[in-house]
Length: 163
Image (cartoon, rainbow, N blue to C red; front, side, top):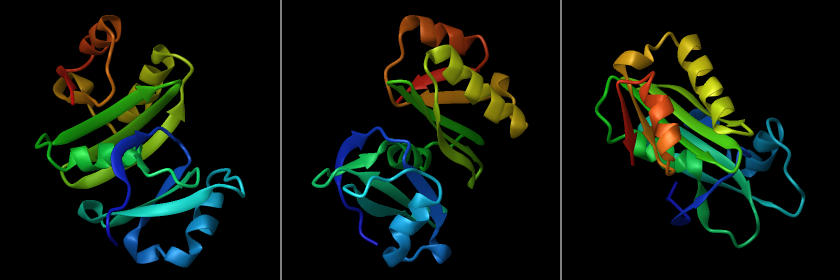
């Protein structure tokens, strides 16, 4: 499946990552509706993520060519060589999160987080659930962080990287 869209980013939580073997292009809308609200006027598209043998299905306005933020996080995770790869973006009340251990994708999701403290809560909840120690891990953010946000993360992570 060819990569479509531009390099600009679509900040939406209305997407789903589907294993490639279960994806059927004609059923993309039905697959997405199972996990997210999709307006009848919206277009449902998909983009392959070959590194993880998966397809990202997402809703967007007709004519929109940007790819979802989760796509950009997944693509960026391919080039990071850390054992634990933690990639995130925080934009307009939503945390976008991808966590990979070696080559195994552990989570690709977004969370409604009204403020950065809530976003941190979700980040640490996921890491605890996956039994990953932030003290020996780096976190990579694609969206800009304020000085306070960066300092808050440095209290828990080995390093905080800006992609």
